[in-house]
Length: 191
Length: 191
DNA sequence: TATCTAATTAGGTAGTTGTCTAATTAGATA
DNA sequence: TATCTAATTAGACAACTACCTAATTAGATA
Image 1 (tube, rainbow over the protein chains, first blue to last red):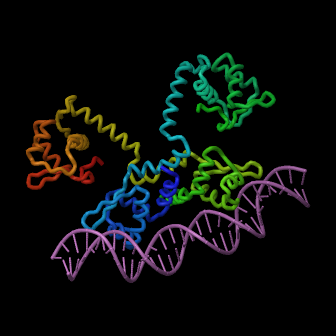
Image 2 (cartoon, rainbow over the protein chains, first blue to last red):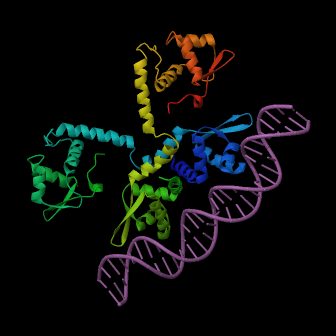
């Protein structure tokens, strides 16, 4: 799916008349005259719009004698709709998969009482656990070193190592022994 | 979410320059001058486009000193993208739920060897089972009554009752004792 | 206060698009 | 073949829009 076709898809949906046509077709196929009648428009106008809708691929037609019936291809309609955010970002499905895997790692390394068994040595898993640990910290709040130490000790006695990992992996930054969460964009990522 | 806003959303995405802006922002926030530079456009043109993007709600801004940074709201971006097909049709999630329920009914009334225990008396469940039964019939093919009877007997000996249910619920129609599947639009539905 | 930078507003131009009427085409039927 | 219906094409007009330059505003800083 090249970008150009996607722009065209959205341009086509960006017109109230064409949306009204789609609403009609969503309840079942119709022919041109019927659409024109229901919308109070002339036949050539319908031809004009159907050409655009057909060009996107979400509408197709079948001829029966002299009459042409228009249908929506719902599958395509849905997949084209989601295509743009999926191109710019990771598809939702992958995200859910990632979330599931992360949950599995957390289950492996975090005890039932919430404490940490030990830091994973595998980088990917370590990042997942570090993310889990900082969940309880507040965005924009400044923490003195002592407070950070106390916080980490709720999970594991070796607060020095974990505090260092927070800094190395850009989850937090330190200035004059005051700690603060970094914006999420800066955090280390898995891929 | 009113229709008008959705039309506007798609109209906004229906422009190549704005898509390029979104691609840039998807990798991280940027300010106006940076966007203008990367795209080879002048500042007022960027203002023009950012106004439209902001109006849809998928882009917001934060000021830092004199510079305005633009951000995409990915959640909104995704949900607006799916909104139109979800308005015209049943949301995908509901469909999956329905499919699961239907599967449960089939499991209850169909034996391991594929035969039918008995027709459910509850209308909803009956429709589900009838749909399941006609799965093996071919669209557009004409069946003599004898062939239909044989087909149904593979599921249940009482072919006469089930054959009648096919007709009553518009899954098939009969002409001169020749049976044929109706188009799917005509089938009885649950809701 | 004067100055600098980033953003916005105003106004203009070229190109696009939604709609129409009138004329034409495509296909079925008497 | 003549005729009917549905759809399309051609061509026109008004509305809209993407982009520009020039001028202005908003906010920070020397």
